Amino acid sequence: MSLTDTLKNTLSALTEGGLNRYRLDIPSCTASLDVEEFNGREFMSELYYYEVIFTSSDQNISSAQLLTRPATLTMGTGPLMGLTGQKVVHGVVTHFKRISGSRDQATYQIIIEPFLSLLRKQFRTHRFFVNKSVPEVVTEVLQEHGLKGWEYEFTLKADYPKREQINQYKENDLAFIERLLAEVGIFYFFTLQPDTQTEVVHFADKQSAWTFGKSLPLSSPSGMSDNAADSVWGVNVRQNVVERSVIASDYNHREAQNILTSVPADMTRGDGDGVTYGEVYHYLPRHLERGDKIAPSAETGNFWHALNMSVFCLYRRPSAGAAMMPCFLRPGADHQ
Image (cartoon, rainbow, N blue to C red; front, side, top):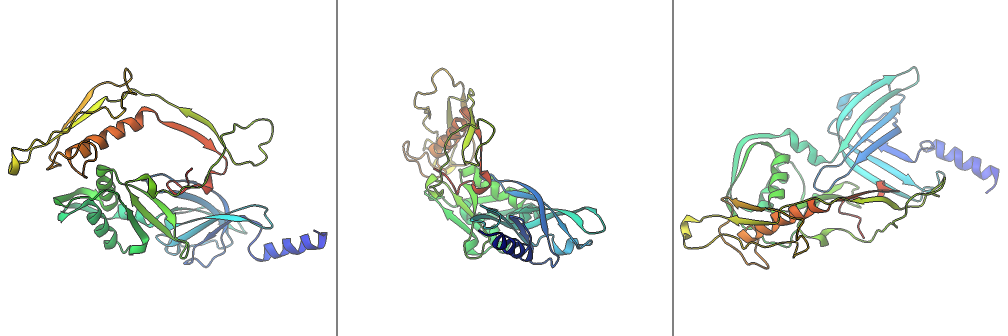
């Protein structure tokens, strides 16, 4: 490429928005916004958030232009003069702050979270749902807040029964649906809708709901340069003593002759001999049937027993690590 071509490309980039691989778009704000720095965190079964610091020649951007408004943060990859890929984060602005100002520009800070975060602001002292299943109650709450059918998705292997009554007591709408989902082992994660470039929340109880296909090599950094190679390193595994077994029991006064106590079992299948200890006994009014020992139906005694035991197994051997290029991975959406 000649010097003339380089100068032309540089001028074009400056004209179209500057030499910045990161872009912040807030349609409700007419001011020009230039991303200075950002940091973000994404989780499984928790809300993601991105804290963005940006500058603008507009010294007095008002909170009315930003708070609760849709926002999009775009992160580009590749050569600065010809970005080859990008990650897009969409959400709403939940926090706005003017940090400082000078003669030429002002510096601001915002936090971007999914629309679901606004459900924290709707609080109920008490309400109840009658003859509805957990997915039906979650759907009803989401629709109350205006979410369309394409903005959320359930991918479930189990058929969840209708409960006589489900209570929301002294909790906000987000805490309520998160509690219900966690009770029955339904996790959630977010993806980006390709046409609208807005977030979609996925609820699932099986691993096949995840999107697979992205892999990174396990390679520790060495020398003075990593050559910008994508990799995972610093993986560590911890070992903890956890409970050996769980028993779930209940009593149905309508059918008092039925035994509702789950079958005690070791979910480690012998692998935990000598490193697990104790038995957990739950007597809770939450199931009307014992359920099959091998493949129990949802919300039966053996279902609760297996679900609780799987949680203990999760804490038995947790692992952690670091990765290059982590911002282009999404919980639940990129696995190998």
